[in-house]
Each structure stands twice: as C-alpha cells, then as structure tokens.
Image 1 (cartoon, rainbow, N blue to C red):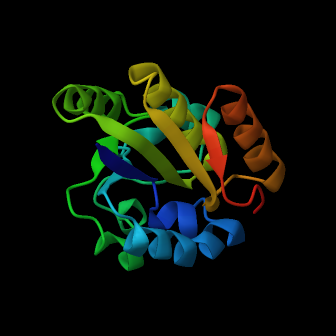
Image 2 (tube, rainbow, N blue to C red; image 1 turned 45 degrees about the vertical axis):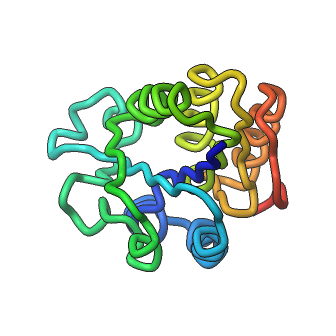
Length: 177
C-alpha cells in the first residue's frame, strides 16, 4: 500500500510574495525536512491564475494579484521544487478536483494507505484539499501535518485544524504557527 504526501501551494507568492507571511516563511525548512524524510510518493499542487484574475469571482473577493501563471510568484519555492518528482498539479481554485479524481483512480489499481497534506494556506487550500480528498477517498487515512502548515492568521490556522479534526482528518504535529 502506498503513502502519498501532497504539498499544497508552496509558492513564492504565498511564502514571501504578494500574500506571504512570516509564518509561511517559517515553515519552509520544516516542509523541506518532511520532503527529504518522507518515504512514499510526493505530489505538489500549484495555485494557478491567469492575467484576468481580478475579473474572477475569487479576484473580486481577494483583489490581490497572485500566482499568475509563469510569474515568479507562481513558481514553487526554489528550496522545494528540486524535491518534486513529478509535475505539479495546477489548480484554478482552492481544492483540486483533478487531484481527487487522479488519486481515486490510482487507489483502485494500487491501494493508498494514507495521504498526508502540508503547505499553504491551512485555512483555505489545505482544508479544501483535505476535505475534497476525504470525499473522494472516504476509507483512506487523510492526515494534515500542522507543523508544516501556515494559515492566513494564527487563529484561522487553528480554526481550520479543528474543523478538519471534526471531519475525521488526523492532525499531526504542533497545532500552532
């Protein structure tokens, strides 16, 4: 049975760019260490917007251009991309249906023991993908390593972790930023 690590949106704009935070910067070494020690398959997601971002529903509610395709901010952190064995899954919104569909299909051929999620932001894209994967694969253990996640705020990070725990997603690591 395979183990999978999903690294959610560890992109420059979320670390130290347009929407970056000190908390996001602080988890990069922990994420790198997790990637180096993880025994299993590693997958990355990449938040991907086009030049018309400000005209989209998300852009109207969060009017900060970020993760525009082919920009520096869209790129995975240079410290981490070297540890990505396959092309990142580009996603146009918080959760990736493509990721869920791909893993559900693969689970039928080669059962998945667990899926661990790490990355940014706990309270938006990590929770969205964790819940989506729980819906696609209800019998697969879904884990979030809180020590390798950061939210928009400390409070929203902790709220997201609590919500995921209530949905039978296992929370590992420290529940803090």
